[in-house]
Amino acid sequence: MFHLKDAFNFYIITGNKDLFSTEPHKGIKSNEWNVLANGEQVFYFSDEYFSRKNLAALLKDTAYDCVYLNSFFSKRFTIYPLLLKKLNKIDKSIVIAPRGMLSSGALHLKSQKKNTFIALAKLFSLYKNLTWHATSAQEEGEIKNVFGTNQIIYKISNLTLPPVESRTDYNKQVNELRVCCVARISKVKNILFALEVLQSIHTGTIVFDLYGPPEEADYYKRCTELAATLPKNITVSFKGDLQGNEVEQALKKYHLFFLPTLNENFGHAIVEAMLNGCIPLISNTTPWRNLQSQNIGWDISLNEKEKYTMAINEALQMNQTTFENKSKAVQQYALTHCMDVANIEAYKKLFNFIP
Image 1 (cartoon, rainbow, N blue to C red):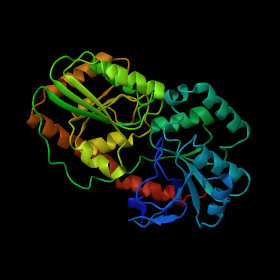
Image 2 (tube, rainbow, N blue to C red; image 1 turned 120 degrees about the horizontal axis):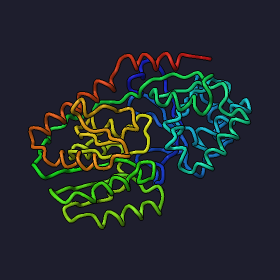
Image 3 (tube, helix red, strand yellow; image 1 turned 90 degrees about the vertical axis):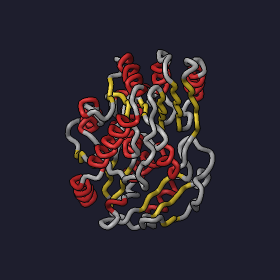
């Protein structure tokens, strides 16, 4: 929104707390408009106040030209608005960004429930006559695969702000590695796989800190149990969730960002890690590909677990000069891709488009 604030007025409607959190965000006013630093206005619904009726009333009292839905399966902030559109309570154009939720990896999890919903949505034309926002060619293909090729799709990568402060700490000793992951502790993020990779590494000193809320109790339990059995040279800590303003400073402490995700349509956490100098070790199921050939990290097939082990061992052997050079190259790569003027102009075309 920062890149588009001079072209559009943004009114954001969302919940007053993070996913899986029980506490509202600090410093906000729930159930009323909040004006943020760049002029965007945000309405934070509390659980108690949210209803389809109250959402409809809020939309009726707000002047807007287009509705942008930032999810596919969200009951409150996607399905309810689409139902209001069907009931003629919304008379404006709708743009929907599925955010990777139509990938085969994402649809495979809880597949029966998701496939049943999609079948019913098609039957009742819930997603008909929309404009789609895909953040990659891969996601464009996923949309067409589920809803057919006769779709209006804008393919535009996400925009990301540069860090507030540049990284200055590049301390790195041979046989020492600080690794982090910022993601939900969930099957789709493949955290258990990451811990399995570490089982075979018995040399060097590795710290692996995981930031993010547990999504499923059973999966989280499996992760913590496996973490407790790792070799003694590896320390794993589940740090819990970070506030948005804490992420940047946290990332600057680490050498490696490890996320063998099943799928990312963009991967905000990956990009933010790169912008703050963390070398990415990720799966090849994200838009960030061919990292090895550019000498800025690794994107590896999930069928080649041994290559993840090799990557970590290679990172362990980096000295400070090697790490600093690679870290700065990673930062420049991320900046080049995420501050693209062509993408900013493409968003202007998207939001000015009225089908």
